[in-house]
Length: 409
Image 1 (cartoon, rainbow, N blue to C red):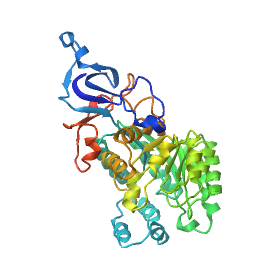
Image 2: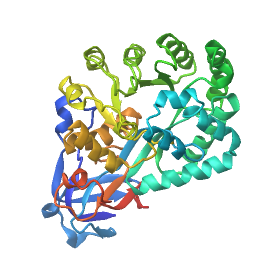
Image 3: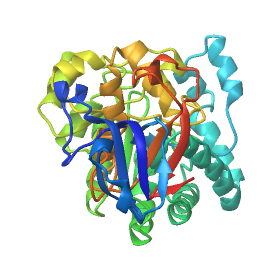
Image 4: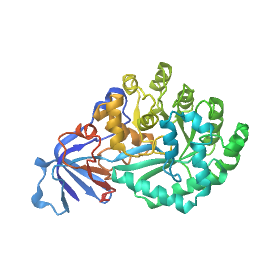
């Protein structure tokens, strides 16, 4: 397929690397461009004025002035869950805190109860509907976490659903084992008992069935301490699971430091962060993944993105799509939120949600930019005046078509 009359072809890179600091404001593009696809891959691109259509034998698709950019790489989601939690949404409006809801058996524990009551087939159907919805909003690669099972059977049920999604969907999908999301009620006063269950009972099956790419821990006050986090990460290493960390959402928890120490691919959240954590991240290869829609939904402070960029940190953006603190996988809205509330430039936000998001899932060899040899995972916009119009017009769906592996969806 030859795509012609692209107003702007965005994210064009001959070679890619993880972007840091000031680099994130650089978003290469071609004006009035064409793009050629063979099978699932991008094979060529260039300016329309250099294209000779007289000898063209490929199927031609006229983009009619659309902007074309790489699909989003959403590197932190929890889309396998049962039902919804709008009652807790009302509690939050009334002033009940996230921690108070958790203490009453709400939050993650609420979702764990529902997972136990829901069949694997029903979980798959619910997750599939969410995946299809976000695909239509431009997501082409996604990481999905477990963490609402909180038991051997529940966690394995979630991971097996993710495995089925991997096999069924054309999207690139990574799976993360997050049994260390909170402590189930039966282990509330026996933390080591639950940790031993994770290490001795869950991890061997997760590894033998190859159900996860990563291991994650919610390192937070009232959840998993730094020492407990290290114990779980070290067990995961033995099974080849690379670490990711839920870090510093509610407190200065030590999550950033433990993540950097253990060479985590990413530390995610970072709503609560000091200069100590910023300096720690700046001197590491670990990516800081910001989840501003969770801060938006919980009415929390936003991560200081400008301060992090000034410290030369590599940032990714992800949706944290989950039933309790971010019930949305809408990356275009997330990009607008990042620009409006964290003062990221549109170019920085798009890079964070594409190429750096791809690095946060270790799929940058396949997606995240318009590069020869990468998958033709592309977003085609409706008519817009400029790239900045995407986050500026935050309430409007400006995506016309989505292409995954060279096929319009």
